[in-house]
Length: 252
Image (cartoon, rainbow, N blue to C red; front, side):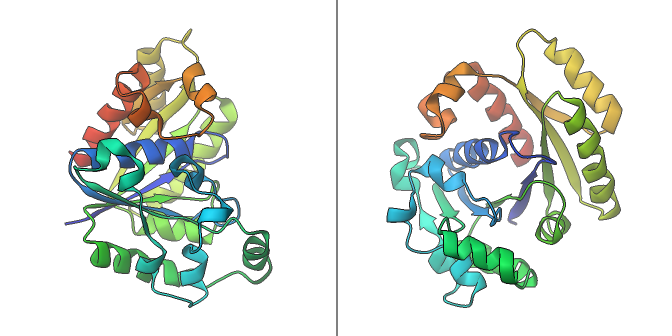
């Protein structure tokens, strides 16, 4: 049975899209069929990690939402762009449009959020996916609540920052009321001067939710500047090892 994983953060800038791309790539690398949908329609970005720009992205989630085509036709098989996946597993990306006119239309007119529910299941069926990752819009809005509601796992990304701690508490409360089957947390961009085990225990104590891993602030990640998927370019990096551990918990 397929698993739907929503990756969410209360604020932007937590590394949500990078974490989504890394986790999905690792799970696909291990021989699974994995899809990613960018539902951050107002400010899309995960496509950049897979080498897409406006010039080479001719279809998007927006086309499905406006009734132009089935959602499966908006999915790009990005396995060939990632050599370590080429002969093992498959990874598909449904990006959101980065055209100014398309984003303006969403902001001006909105869209039928209910279409997302149908679209996710259609995508799972059409592509025979084992895992579907939903890269959500930060904060709590209608499409984010919908994604959380239908998720098997909600992965919350937060930084060791008081604003993140307080905002994430709101999301946790909502997720519990929506009876999400499983919630997992990941702490990202943690300064190496911190005691990671102590930080992990503090966060688990605050929310009573397991922390899948603590990702260190990485200069190497900053220098990569979203020009690729970190875990595939640096498979032996300590950060990659932590992401692999989180991936195992998602699979487990």
